[in-house]
Image: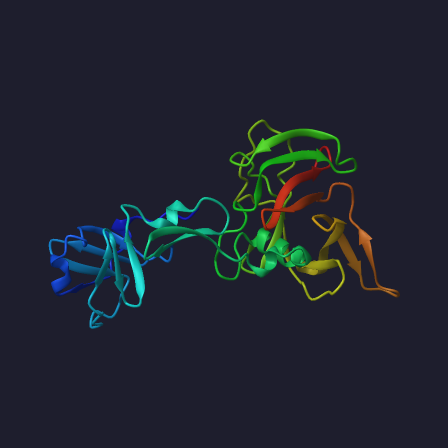
Length: 284
């Protein structure tokens, strides 16, 4: 979850005192509309508006509604000692200031959370964030990830708490997906293997309409991602290296046994897809 501190709000416009500040309804403190990050500070008979690069803006006079609530700039503002962004309870749940105070709002899930949009969701999961820069990877990793046998998914080796699971093998960097070939061992506490030299870097191509599309490696090597709908609320994606032979009847040739291979299983609950299984081949 992204953290914000009041001290980080550096750009402010100081507005002249307003008559309504004399009302005891407008107490000193920090006021917010919701989780947008916009803040107003009332301090010593001054209104300080944050996140306004144009200091020449002249806002309307605040209208006190109730203790700790006023109407300003066509919105309600409620008093809070912390940024309401940090008050989110679960995925895409937000809080909003109203004339009656704070209320919890369940925001509409993004399009990639729809059951039919699992390929788009997977691309965002690999990248780590969506097009709006919302964090995806950690948010939609299940509370526990089962490490299981690639050929027999029901054979679970062990489970890893979400906080300790750091071994997702696919990543995206500057338009290239990579598979970390070093990440093969089973260890008690999984370790992040960023900045390792032994990687395969793959370019993602999602233009294929079918449920199995291909990503291209540099030097005309490839990796295939095969999607499988297990049910309407569960899908599996297998990844494995392959080489494209540009010969008569061009075809995909599977790579040798030492190549990266594995699979991930995602299940749909609480309005979106979540990673629940990491399927591995022993020794890889």
